[in-house]
Length: 404
Ligand code: SF4
Image 1 (tube, helix red, strand yellow):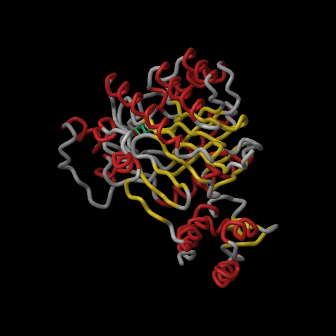
Image 2 (cartoon, rainbow, N blue to C red):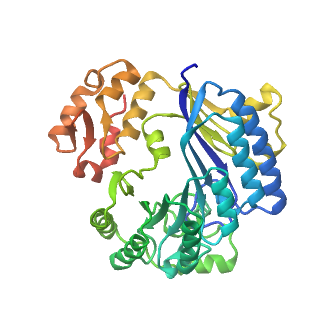
Image 3 (cartoon, protein in one colour):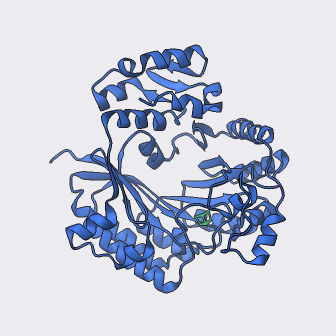
């Protein structure tokens, strides 16, 4: 049998019950008709895209959004069944689905599991109801608990909980409380990112450099509510929260394997590790991106174009799914290999670099690696170049050194 290459799949479901105030993902509320049309078109896309990737075996799938669990159960199982029948999926593949509190029923979870999902990622963000309200989340901590119990009752033994620190009005104490409550539940994996105020979000109008209060998309009440939100924690407090996360989660038996990701041993997210180590991936659905054969491309981000498009004709297929086609140069690939790999605590493998590029990493980056080592920002350990704690603190500076 031909040796197949490894590939990961990402499937985007763009619908959410309501838009959170900090969110800049491609997501929006959708009615039943939009969800049905989208599912049908996604099934078409799965059929067409899979025909181009016969030489690959899928080692992980991530169904993200948006809120995938917002789809009807039969829509989601149709998508999962199509993936299973159209792609060659490794029997041990990690198959993650994002599920937001308040959008999962026990019956649905059992169906997802039957259709192959073996990992659930839950967006909690904070265990404090006031903070959840500031973020514009649709659920309370109690609702999360109920959903979490349903997930466990359905038999999922690999669960991630997403958290965000440095949110409006948050104190180090309340962040610690969130960490405490979540670790008591013993999820296998915790993602803990600091809030980033992204342009184009209501939070940017409130906290960005350029406060914009004439945003027409907001009602007078929404604007008033936004302006009454408490201030963001300052930089020192944000750092304190970050250090606390690292230390507290370590005490609780979670190993940090990436700058913002922690897990129990053996439960690192394989899909994300694949992404950070340069495994090829195919994105399916609105706005998703792919990296196949050294090329990166993006699906259209226009819902109407996606729904109305036809995958049957080559030109239309290319227009819908090959937007912003970019062929990465060898330098571009090396830079990306370093940027992504250095996010991992283990670092970048010198051996892996040779296998990927046929060149010794020191030939390309020798003087930079030496300089960063002298500055105490990087170290070489067991064949891996990795960031030191100090290097992680100023990772943007360190990464910028690897531009060729
Ligand atoms: S649930 Fe997630 S994707 Fe949806 S609006 Fe909130 S942050 Fe964005």
